[in-house]
Image 1: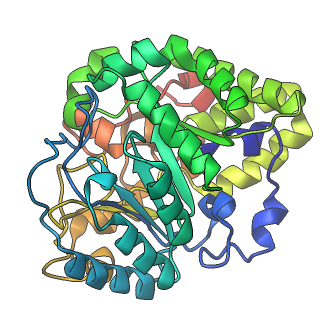
Image 2: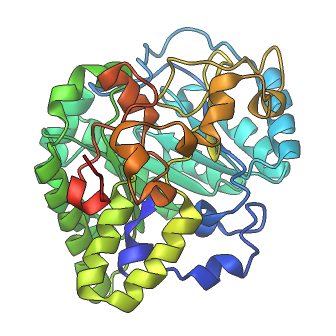
Image 3: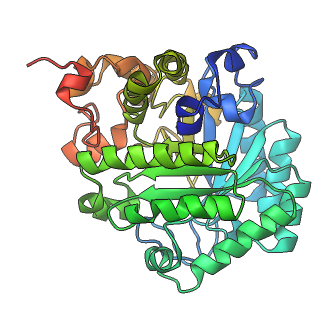
Amino acid sequence: MIGISKLYCGQAEASDALRYGRESGKLPSHLLQFSKDKKPVVVWNMTRRCNLKCVHCYAHATALDGADDISAGQAKAMIDDLASYGAPVMLFSGGEPLARKDLVELASYATQKGMRAVISTNGTLITRSKARELKEVGLSYVGISLDGLERVHDRFRRVSGAFQKALEGIANCQAEGLKVGLRFTINKGNVAEIPGIFSLLKEREVPRACFYHLVYSGRGSNLIGEDLNHQTTRETLDLIMDETRALFEAGHPKEILTVDNHADGPYIWMRLLREDKKRAEEAYKLLQFNEGNNSGRGIGCISWDGQVHADQFWREHAFGNVLERPFSQIWDDPDIELLHKLKNKKAYVGGRCALCRFLDICGGNFRARAEAFYGDIWAQDPACYLTDEEIATKD
């Protein structure tokens, strides 16, 4: 994650993270990306079932009916291990996590064990009573996916009325005092909706939004041609920065992040160099703390069937199964070659990444995209939009 508001608008300083020793177990959630130990935030796709049919679903979600692979008892054993290991956050995802009747029970169990529990949802199943239950068990955050305003969102979700139901879910969370934010996956079909999303943040008093770059995974593998070209990506980052700054200066500050393209960090820094050199220096320190992409190190994924992956988008490689062996043992196993290399992937990336002066703050960007595009895990990320001159590559 790249914190636009933290870096560009000065909502975080390096000293904020240093105050907590940069230890993931002590850092507040908004500073967790700057931890030094990089204990993994674990995404658990607790079900593959979903009530929508999103065109870009990375999980290839299935219909609501059916059974789940991991029982509540098995899930609690998994949470015990994660909590003992020191994983600071458990993100309950899907499919649609609210398709599972035991979501509240398991989120409560995670918080009782000292973890922060958050959910990633389409929002359509969050009734007022469900929001109250989630608040009562100590859920930290609800991320609700929107792909644009009503017409565009419903087209992406392939279910009429999905937008209005998501807005109801947002309102229900807010009514119960549950922190809620938006998740938006950028592509050619919805990039024009970004100003409308910022207007929605202001009008609905939503405090946070994450703008995801497209990853070629799941149904998203069919959307490679819908990814933005490099120039449009640059323009989009400038737009997001401009919109974030406008809200900030108007007295409506929001936490704005971009996700899954760590070229955004150097791009923000280069813009700050032109506009505010002092702020640029502080932003660079934070980017060094962040360390760029952390798949296989600072983030991990447990799939609906118990398989362990480097992140939720990259399912081509499984390192083990929590139904057979604890996550903590899998994650630290030096004999799992790819997982071991991902913890120091800067030594293995090739192409432009290997020569880039920003490698330490980008971390080689997204390996899932490189493999999907080139068939090579260690190739350069095709979505990196920085020029050869900017990254100081040599022929």
